[in-house]
Amino acid sequence: MPRFYFDFYLGSDSSRDEVGSEIGSHRTAEIAVMRTAADLTRDRLLKMQSAVPDDIRIEVRDEHRQPVLAVTVSIQVERAGPIPPDE
Image (cartoon, rainbow, N blue to C red):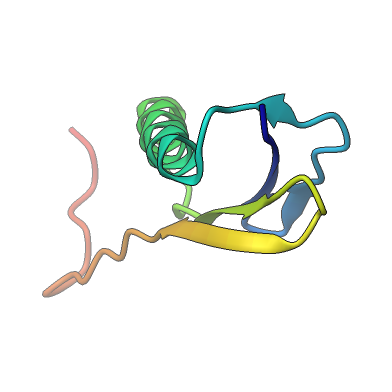
Protein backbone atom coordinates (compact mmCIF):
# COMPACT_ATOMS: atom_id res chain seq x y z
CA MET A 1 0.00 0.00 0.00
CA PRO A 2 1.40 3.47 -0.88
CA ARG A 3 2.68 5.74 1.88
CA PHE A 4 1.85 9.46 1.94
CA TYR A 5 3.35 12.22 4.07
CA PHE A 6 1.29 15.23 5.23
CA ASP A 7 3.32 18.35 6.01
CA PHE A 8 1.45 21.08 7.92
CA TYR A 9 1.97 24.84 7.62
CA LEU A 10 -0.10 26.95 10.03
CA GLY A 11 0.81 30.59 9.64
CA SER A 12 4.50 30.73 10.55
CA ASP A 13 4.49 27.26 12.20
CA SER A 14 5.27 24.09 10.30
CA SER A 15 5.40 20.38 11.00
CA ARG A 16 7.03 17.94 8.59
CA ASP A 17 5.62 14.40 8.57
CA GLU A 18 8.53 11.96 8.85
CA VAL A 19 6.41 8.84 9.49
CA GLY A 20 3.70 8.99 6.83
CA SER A 21 0.50 7.00 6.54
CA GLU A 22 -0.42 4.06 4.36
CA ILE A 23 -3.31 5.17 2.15
CA GLY A 24 -4.82 3.11 -0.66
CA SER A 25 -4.61 5.61 -3.53
CA HIS A 26 -3.84 9.17 -4.57
CA ARG A 27 -7.56 9.95 -4.65
CA THR A 28 -8.03 8.63 -1.10
CA ALA A 29 -5.06 10.73 0.05
CA GLU A 30 -6.63 13.78 -1.61
CA ILE A 31 -9.90 13.23 0.23
CA ALA A 32 -8.04 12.67 3.51
CA VAL A 33 -6.05 15.90 3.19
CA MET A 34 -9.20 17.91 2.37
CA ARG A 35 -10.98 16.49 5.42
CA THR A 36 -7.94 17.15 7.61
CA ALA A 37 -7.73 20.76 6.39
CA ALA A 38 -11.45 21.29 7.04
CA ASP A 39 -11.24 19.80 10.55
CA LEU A 40 -8.17 21.85 11.39
CA THR A 41 -9.82 25.04 10.12
CA ARG A 42 -12.95 24.37 12.18
CA ASP A 43 -10.95 23.62 15.34
CA ARG A 44 -8.80 26.74 14.97
CA LEU A 45 -11.82 28.98 14.36
CA LEU A 46 -13.65 27.59 17.41
CA LYS A 47 -10.63 28.41 19.61
CA MET A 48 -10.05 31.88 18.15
CA GLN A 49 -11.01 34.89 20.27
CA SER A 50 -9.55 38.10 18.86
CA ALA A 51 -6.77 36.57 16.80
CA VAL A 52 -6.27 36.91 13.08
CA PRO A 53 -6.83 33.60 11.26
CA ASP A 54 -3.67 32.18 9.70
CA ASP A 55 -3.60 30.36 6.39
CA ILE A 56 -3.61 26.60 6.73
CA ARG A 57 -1.65 24.63 4.16
CA ILE A 58 -1.10 20.89 4.00
CA GLU A 59 1.34 19.54 1.45
CA VAL A 60 1.22 15.85 0.54
CA ARG A 61 4.26 13.85 -0.56
CA ASP A 62 4.25 10.31 -1.97
CA GLU A 63 6.28 7.26 -0.97
CA HIS A 64 9.27 8.73 -2.84
CA ARG A 65 8.79 11.93 -0.81
CA GLN A 66 7.91 13.81 -3.99
CA PRO A 67 5.17 16.48 -3.88
CA VAL A 68 1.78 15.18 -4.98
CA LEU A 69 -0.67 17.92 -4.03
CA ALA A 70 -1.36 20.71 -1.56
CA VAL A 71 -4.48 22.08 0.07
CA THR A 72 -4.59 25.66 1.33
CA VAL A 73 -7.39 27.14 3.43
CA SER A 74 -7.44 30.91 3.75
CA ILE A 75 -10.08 33.03 5.43
CA GLN A 76 -10.11 36.77 4.89
CA VAL A 77 -12.34 39.16 6.76
CA GLU A 78 -13.07 42.43 4.96
CA ARG A 79 -14.64 44.92 7.34
CA ALA A 80 -16.67 47.87 6.10
CA GLY A 81 -15.59 49.89 9.14
CA PRO A 82 -14.21 49.63 12.66
CA ILE A 83 -15.38 46.82 14.91
CA PRO A 84 -17.76 48.08 17.60
CA PRO A 85 -16.64 47.34 21.19
CA ASP A 86 -18.04 44.23 22.87
CA GLU A 87 -20.92 44.89 25.20
